[in-house]
Image (cartoon, rainbow, N blue to C red; front, side, top):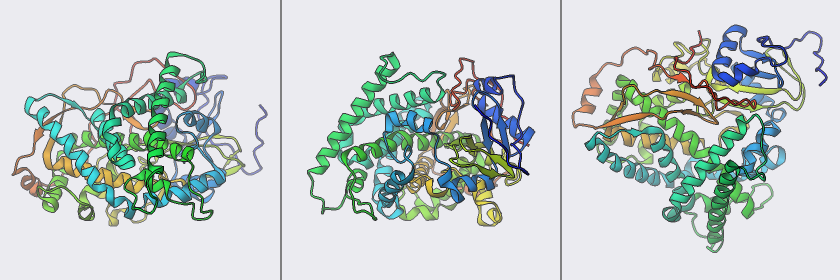
Length: 507
């Protein structure tokens, strides 16, 4: 392949030399997250990795703003990403570009604004209540639970009930298993050394195709049932809202296939990122007791013993800060891939068309130029006073720009309701000795789960928390990084055992 010519006055981004021919490929194979952090420390906010597929790591907020907002049309997803994810979600919001994407965004976005979503708060409260009632049994027996598994089940139930209203109960088991199989397949495709087409009857491909058929049969059946209902009634679920919302420019309604693809996108991308965030919040609720008790005292003061409502959420100010800080430390979309259509300039460096760019929110959220004590847990860093002057794109848990997460309002509402409900009922304690290992898949997950035990909240707990001082922000409990790097986007797999060392902390 002919090397791109660097225009006069510009230069390529700096980066590690790596090995002959292979460049940094083996480092990616062993541990991409640590490789990225070390290269950022050594070479700065824009790093070029050599190898069979050269990769540019992007971390500075100004460059993120250029890619995600100012020049976003020049930076679509790589075709390979859209193809691999598209085998599951089809041509939904995540995997389309250009005018096709714009038309979908115009149609889908009104459904996910705050006002239409308020009707789903009761679903979130009710699903949380049912989970917490199951937890009462575990609290009495002392049996541990896995926060990752619990939150995956909870967020899938909430999403399915919001999408399909009363139809969820009879489809819960098959949908849950099928969605899990789809996620497993996509993660495997994104890291595979050789991408085997789905038509080849490997065991994994057979499982994937069977799961996709289950989802297709279920979703198309539900679409057909909705088509039989009058269109002039108030939409009671997300599927009906999507079905009856026209493109504001063309007036067109979505076809059955387009509805299927949007529903699948929500199932695969929507619930997983919220579940990952909730599981890390559970970890923080155990390891950050002072901040947790302050949030619990606020919930008690606002809600007492009653369930939260939409009207309560603006009053839970400290809880909002707590959740924002959790999203900073553990961004569910820890990296975002883009590929420029035309040459561009980032931080004074030449970026040729066709470059594989990785935007690392994980590193951006830890850059000490913009964050004091970046590895510390400090919710109050998000107060208006301390946020003044911080670049907008220094904090991008939901990406940013025109292609930001369309479900951001839904996710924030869900996070607040679930965590407030949890704080009312339980203390969470980490199981001693259980390894907490970050696994960078599509989202940033806990590889071995987050094993915890439960203690019911006593009447006096919130009062005690209200007067307890908030200690200075300190580093959270060590979290190891998975050296097997199951989320490596460069086609490098690994069978290596996970690292048990703490995650690298940028200095």
